[in-house]
Length: 177
Image (tube, rainbow, N blue to C red):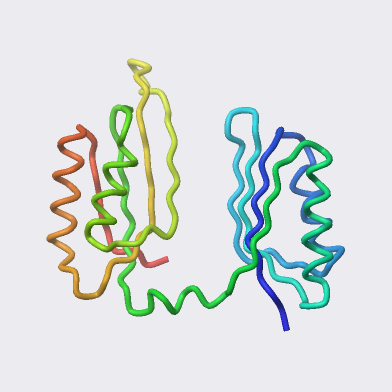
């Protein structure tokens, strides 16, 4: 039987970091089931769902925690893999937001989704410079799941209104994977 944990790690970016972490996991027969990794400024951040045989679970956790000695912040949290059943029957959508960067965009979008009972599954955000003016532009892409009884056009139109008040473009489309 395999057990699961969520592993987070952040610290100074360097060549070979991902190789070092996955080597530790491999030494304890750990398997990366889902992951997100990104360089954020000069830091590197990792978020992983890892599985390991039950008898290797605690040694794996200790092996990963040893990276703290190299200056990394590491957390491990046991979890269950059956999370998908919680939102069984919910409808997936992709939400894209683009526009001039300003404080609060993520908060206002997330608040609207939460008020409608919509769960955010993944969210990626970033900034880039406009080609001609160099103005900072915000971009967001999220996968969300909505309760099956929630009318799509209602929450989509309301979200577009939120975007209009923030002067950003919003686009919601069914997500097919």
